[in-house]
Structure formats: structure tokens, C-alpha cells
Length: 268
Ligand SMILES: [Zn+2]
Image (tube, rainbow, N blue to C red; front, side):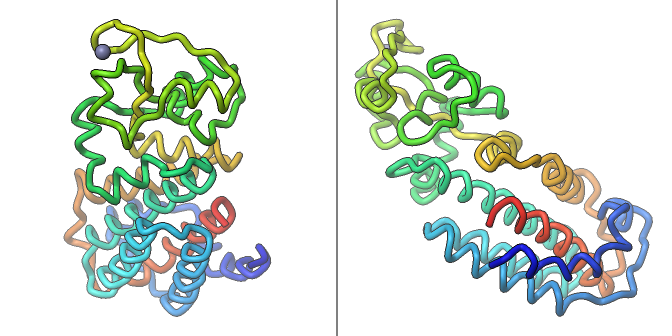
């Protein structure tokens, strides 16, 4: 898929690039132009790319979210339309990161597949932002190192044999990490202060996921961050249930084309 293929979509959105969805929804501004057909074309193309490049079970969630976003938009459901679009953005960023990490049995993928993500978060295995992710890893590897393989576990928490017992799937031994990186690591267990033998992964919050996407792709992701923020504002605190439902598909199509153009550039 060449980049050129998507250039022509720019003409549909060029008159709409200065306003965010919040401007339209908040002021009840109606868009008369209907580019649903073009949006569907782009949906299909992005779906094909997702299936091809991210062959994980958890990619299916992103594809379903996109279908549901479109369905909700057609049916005038503002909140559901943009909630699903936000999910697409988040899940797609995550599978891209996973594909770049080149880590066998990637713990992010497993945590979602096994529905154990929230349990690790409840145990405070959390990365709140990119700097926390890189900070912990670069502490051992030196700056500018792009974490792949077992190195990603250095973003987690060092634990002794006893305290890491429950997290076998979500941790790696320090020996493995040392072997792969050639770095020597001495750490104490974060719970009891004994010698640590494993690192247990920490899972990224949404803000960290977008930041990590920037790290792994080398792209500026601030515009994607703006999309994410706008979608979040629809859900909380505004809702925008007063927006005329029949015109939602027009707004959603333009917004999705704008988002899709950014995604194409960064992800595929
Ligand atoms: Zn311990």
C-alpha cells in the first residue's frame, strides 16, 4: 500500500481541518457534505492493513470497534460513535507497539487476551507516561535505547522469587534479561528488599500508550493525542446528546477520514 493511495482523501477534509469535533458538537454545527462512502472505503483499507500487519487475536477488537463506531454514527449515537473510535485508536496503537517490541509471548497481548490486565493494574503494575517507561529502562541500558525483546520488562518492577511467583507469565528472570542485553543488573525486591530475581511487567495507561507509539515509530503523535483527548471529552463530561442525530454520520465520516490519514502515516 503506497502512501499515494491515500492522498486523495485529503481533499474531502481540507475544509474541516481547523475545527475539532468538540467545535461541531458543542455548537450544534451541522455538516451538509456526506463522505460516508469515502469513509467506508478508508475503513476497509485500514481493516485490511490491520489484519495483514498485526496478526494477533486482540486486533479483532479494533476492527469491531471501528464497525460499531460507524454503526453508531449512522444511527445518531454520538457518544457510542466516538467511544468506539477512541477504542480503535487505543487498540491499534497497542498492537503496533506490540509488533515493534519483538517480544515473544508479549505480556501486553497476553494480559488482554486472558482478561488479566486490570488485575495487574490493581496491583499497581502501572506505567503512567512515556517518560516512566523509558526512564526505568534507560536507567539500565543508557539513553536512546529502543526496548525490544526481554528489555521491555525493565520498565516493570524487580521482585524476589517469592513475590514474583504469581506473575510467571508477566515477568522474566534477570538472568534472561542480562543474557540478552549483556548488561549486569543488581536489584532488590520492591516488596521485601531481598535480592530480586525477576522483573514483572507494568502496563501502560492510555496516555503512555500513545507516547510509546511515538517512541517506537519515530513519529510525532501529538495530533493523535489531540484526537484521543477530544473523543474523551465527548464521553466525559459533555455527552452531546442534543446534537442532531441524522447529521452525525457526516461529522463522523469527516473526522474518521482525518484520523485515518494520520493512522495510515504512522502505523502502516
Ligand atoms: Zn520479595
